Length: 361
Ligand code: SAH
Picture 1 (cartoon, rainbow, N blue to C red):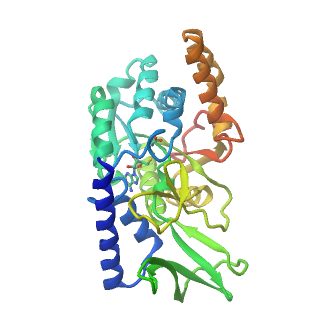
Picture 2 (picture 1 turned 135 degrees about the horizontal axis):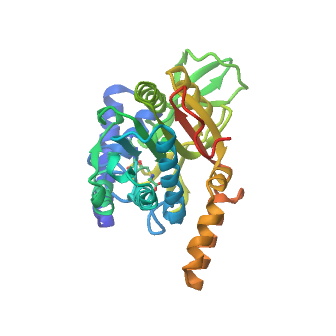
């Protein structure tokens, strides 16, 4: 879309947010983020493909094909460990350009019967990205959903890379021994501004003055839905994202535009808004709902255990010098602790009785 057209949509989103705040009072941050990212006409994801060097951010599957290939081999291995069910629901949450699943399906061809058993379901709310996925994944005949709830029941192989971080967070700030929710209102200058809800929230947790605690209602709901499905039909789910374990206080919400950090409230609809994933909270909710949680393990260790070195060498053996350099630097970026190797983590959920999935010692 031309940038002026996108600019006009951003202005409409701002009008829409102002009207909502006028009618309802200051919005929770989660509401604000939801509107900014997912408003069906003006939201960030509704109006663009944000990925890649010319977009706003780059993700692991876009850095190296090895990433999606290893996820594909993980799926095949897990499928065999649970008895090779046919059919199996192969689900990706937030597939972006469809790159990871395309790479995964290509690698999974080593397993006879897997492609025929896999029913591909994509949970994606962005129309422009759905169109890209339709092109990338045409051969797999995917079915799209707005929510996981509408994917048909059955044994589940689910994966999601950088999906949880896009689910809206609420924030609570510690003031004089109580927690107050941070909300988005309109300041005296007419611009969007943060305000603290004067009513204390019923959050029982001690912390120092000024501490910020984040909560992610959408991730809790998702953890429960996945857990119920795994407990009922078996399977496994793999979540890769950046975040922390154990749970902790901290303001991790960030806006990113053109690979640079931006103001959270400055340009709703024009910047990506994400927050770090609280892996302990996510695993605890899934466990309470009947699943077993594995990890999280650092992305570098996870990819190492799945054989990233061997995979890279195999590709390099058939590559020219330039390609070989790109393969090496891409893989290094994925596993290097100073890059994505430690901040990014992998967490798996399975049925309570399932054997450990590969990569989770
Ligand atoms: N997994 C991809 C893309 C990550 S960006 C990759 O690693 O490259 C986040 C993705 O989740 C996008 O496809 C976005 O459109 C989608 N998304 C974000 N919030 C969503 C929601 N609430 N429901 C469904 N899809 C969502």
